[in-house]
View 1 (cartoon, rainbow, N blue to C red):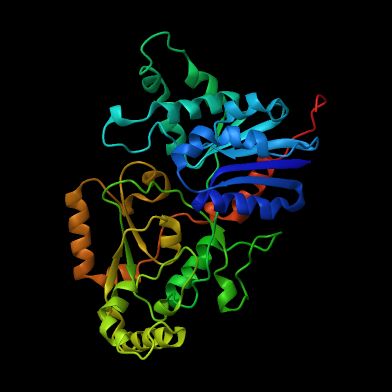
View 2: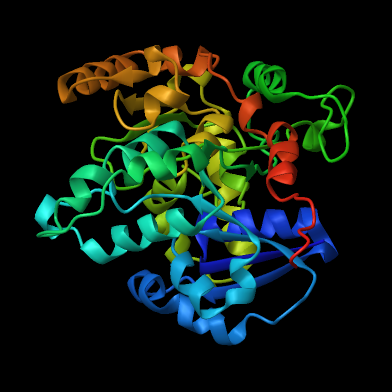
Length: 379
């Protein structure tokens, strides 16, 4: 069995998912991509490009693609691919993506996604909110057509749909997590060793917090906020896709860095960083600055010890317990004000939400099932 993975926007979370699937499937898959640039043009023209570049293979059984690709165009241009089990994955949808004015929404992008859903065999969304916001918007969206509008498209597409959360490979954060939060994190996402799953019990420090999981976000939402506390050693840790919240304090010491004989040398930068950490490590724990962050990746943020403070809207109520949500800007202001006055509330807090369900250990079997099918006689 061969799985054909197609990603028309190979960057960010789109790339992460494809890389994870490719790692899981190994020689069972073929990956075809376009770079993550000018997504508007990728959405318009990627099908024509892949028509010419996707190699023919009689062993193909499944086609997995993100919704950036116009799947209807590709399968029309390549009838051999149209015979496969076609799985379409929605990281976001163009019917609910934020725009300043409904009339400013480009009809073509949403129309492409609707067509792709109609030809797909399985349509997968990364959250229930993403799925419902898409399906329930189809009727209103199609009313933009001046006449001879198609009917009942939601009823046709909905039976194909399911929710499968996005898995994220977390970095090792044990070096800067306080002990009480690290222990709590292990309880939240600790799993027994099984295949590629991880077992926390008895593992050394850096291996304890190796885990997979994921939450989806909408980066264009207003009034997003998160709270993160400064931890000893945090500024010494740099991970791909994970920026240290201590960037601002480092900039405060910019004058000290400029006096270095060669501030571009790695040794000098590390020396400055460690000096900052040494200074903060001598401070009383409760006196250290409380950092307020607006993360684009909310789990990762919670996984790293942040206290989530999210709007009571969009996908957030689906993921976070009610105590982490606010309804109005005034509520946000009051809670931030309280946290600034009492940073110990954040520092002592242990996250009460669910994390294990977003780990690769929990999701791996579902993705494997999604990418499995019985060979068809006409292939």
